[in-house]
Image (tube, rainbow, N blue to C red; front, side):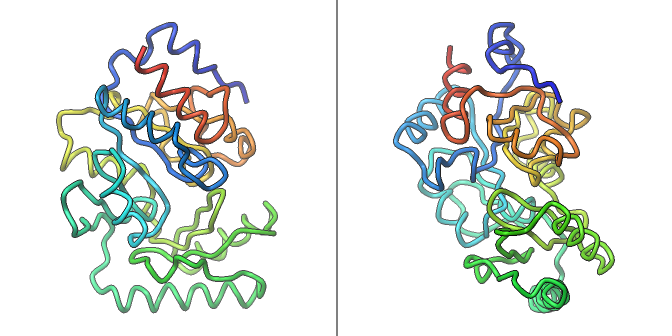
Length: 255
């Protein structure tokens, strides 16, 4: 798959109409699982030019804290399940969950079914802090196994996705793109999807790369590890990987 280099888009001023950045977190903002000092400085400088929304698969519990400390305009958690605006302690539910207790019980039952075929999969450490989805670690899972897990979830009436960190059992229609579109409509109506630059690195970001929804998208270089697994590919590619790739983008947008 051929990706256009980011520096070409910057040189051609293809992002001149961008008004907001919506970015994944793990593997996109983080480097080896951490926020670097350079990344934090880039976010700080970027917010003076463009608002930044985090769109992550991480749990409600994690994201509710992060959004209070990072220089961002808000954060979407659990792959489109919830939105945390800044200066607001309560999340906005984006996915239809009428009864959280029954929902969690149904997710647990689905995970138990997956474990019956894959006994080695283990619930993620942050799963206890989740509201709309259920996660387990994706270490030691092959692509064929991930595809089979996806099929099993579909048979059970659930959706499935995975990132560089975790696998997610989720409501079938819940994904990053649908969550982001709802947040744009309700909280940032001044920005059209074509004015949003989406950024990511792995399969759970694929909906953000859908050109029919978000024509301007960037993959940090490590997205190449999943190039053949993505339903949609990003329009542009950074030279650097992970957090350094995002910093490359941030610097280009501030020129």
